[in-house]
Length: 287
Image 1: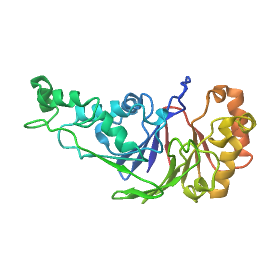
Image 2 (image 1 turned 90 degrees about the vertical axis):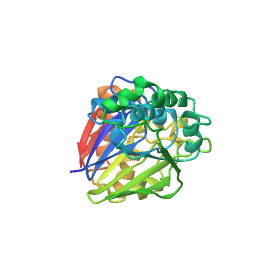
Image 3 (image 1 turned 180 degrees about the vertical axis):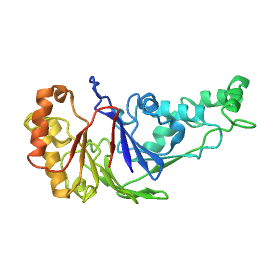
Image 4 (image 1 turned 135 degrees about the vertical axis):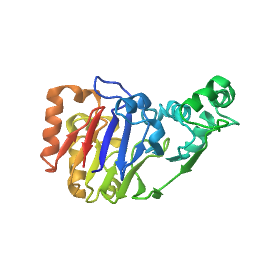
């Protein structure tokens, strides 16, 4: 049974139940990671998934609440590896290659000094051996792929495609994902205003992961209406797409209040009649 673990369901502003964005998607016994927001590495351990289990990491866009734990994830995955794990594959819009090189490369990486220490100091080499590693401790290898619209990547039982969504352009390139798998289809809107690209991504999806930052009535007069989605906009896209289930994430602080949350859910249910999951950090759903 495929499942999704919501490591982070929130925005840059921490609330009691949400902070940043990160998902773990289990397909065919393989864990895929989508975004890597604040404290994602720590929280994924709390959900019983180690960074060493991740071979594919996908970024919808490079806002800080989707990428800020990337350095921690890279260093932790490397530190805990025993030499049997495959190279890490990272997929993101431009400039993910430049960002990665600035964090983790011999020539430019701000944290590469730590890689040098951990591959050479006897203390760190011994730790590597205690985890099952043998011989010299190798430097990590990471493969970074920049994508645009179209096919992003594929695995044994899945294929990922991307479409540009409407969020922070022209300053940040922003995309949503569609994963077609042997076990079903799951779509991620990313952060976006309502757009036909999201409807296309979510067409007949078994699970549709969609942001609702505020109630529709509260977003109508805000600048964010051109960049994010309210409760009714999300519901109408899910209904138009024929999505079988919708998982709501990226709720703003206004929706922490139970009364506001209840009204927002009513907004959604008035326009979308499929099963609805209202995510917070550590939510887990089989689909």
